[in-house]
Image 1: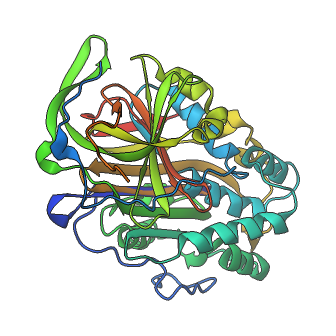
Image 2 (image 1 turned 180 degrees about the vertical axis):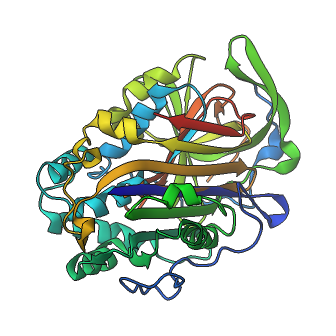
Length: 450
């Protein structure tokens, strides 16, 4: 019997005039995913080349944040995140967007129910300690931190396991999923695929403010026993917002022979920044209001330099220690795209193979026929929009199964007019909410089927 894993991800930006621009999202305020934060196990279905366009007017005094202190710290839970990003980057040259955290959460839940070689492979690839109690404690801490409410940003994370009517969830697994992974178990009748797909899509649409209304269809759920689904939505506002009337048209170099005139946002302000000799690239940190999240942008110095960055991703944390506060002229293209990835092949390459075989062992989820299940598909749907005032991102992962601006002060430049890398990080837990690449800002849709 089959398990499907799906992760739905979303990143949004706040537009000018204080409306919300987002891929799939409107300007409505996002409803909270978890309501009062409680979860009920086994809920019944229905419940629920560089240019310099700058001048003195680009000094952003309204949104300056002199208390933005950057304190880099080692991360001990992100090896899988960078490895996954590197593999996806190497598989194609197009835009991509991943939520390592969303996928890691879905796989962690399956690891709890796995035994033998299936569990060993999952734990090894994910970088988990074989002591499940330590993994639970780590995830509980991360998720508790992410669910902290703030008026400065919105971050909603939802997780559900849909279980077919012919399976009875094990109480211990349901309790662990709820208490440590903030995951709700929901009974659903997959023998009625149209109704099941409608129910699932309704929940996903609600958690993404109606912008992923048709994540699955009846064929997707017709012959499955279990569906693991995580959603992640983030909307943040830049601390140092780009001035809309300073947005200019510049060329973006997709390749040396392929240039596209695009809208570039411009701002001059104090950012944490470094010129990395290791990567032959510039690294910029752009914080969001609330002092919890930040986007990092890595722009290579040469048009073809991005593969060098990805080949050394394991050393990026070291380079982040070199960031220092400087006055920086930033020129960044607006970008907005959707990305769909089927990750079965990449996960198998990384070493998660047994979970996809008939010999997979997931006896810890439920009694009955669900003791004999395997993963059939891992799907992630993501979207991002970045503009003058901020960014919005979303994702769904599915597993079936002083002198402040003095004229005399020197400044640096970062002009992202060539393919570049970015990632959004929770500065408190050092978790990667999203990682991605912009190869062509004008390309609105990309996909990976591997």
